[in-house]
Length: 246
Image (cartoon, rainbow, N blue to C red; front, side, top):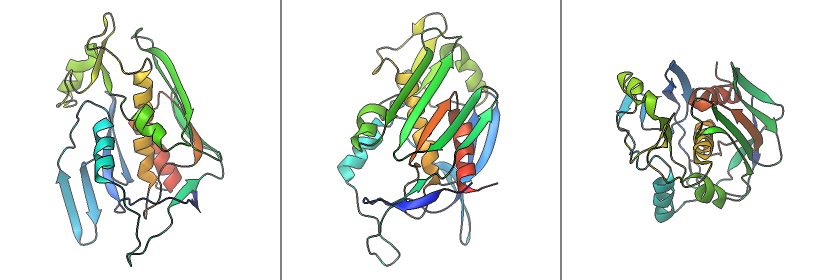
């Protein structure tokens, strides 16, 4: 299905060029999607040929906090059209529900008058994490920077070696991620929030779904997005459905 774009009273400059992104599904495989860039390790196809960008963005502490601070320091600029004139920012509104399901994992978006996100994770093999849910409205622009951006990525200690053998987490360390053991709990505490793992999944979801952005418009749909054990692969699959990419 296609999303319907409506006017907002705010502005934002966003990238426009389509890219090919390879998403690694956790310890299982990869999927390739056409979307808009959130990462710098990607392949870009534009007019006049093909350009490969092989630079990784800094991991920092595994969250988006330093990116948010850098953007605040740089400041925001009103989006402009091809003539350099300011233009309204549009936002995608859903006209009907859409969902992507894989086994017991899913991500769905429902028509709603404001942005709401509800996310659930479940790690029965890691009791310290267990099952967590996070749900909130994103009506306040400061909510992301204050409640989501500082949530760090995490990994399971007993899976680290296998992930490295697969060529993943090459830049990972105790300084760039939270590490949780199945038997010993968190190995590098403290957490910033009791539900920090779930909040980081919300951070991932926002980043992935924002790939829907095009032409200087907002990517995150004005909808109620509900996800359970989704991850990057399902998130980007949702983007494919919303953007009409086969």
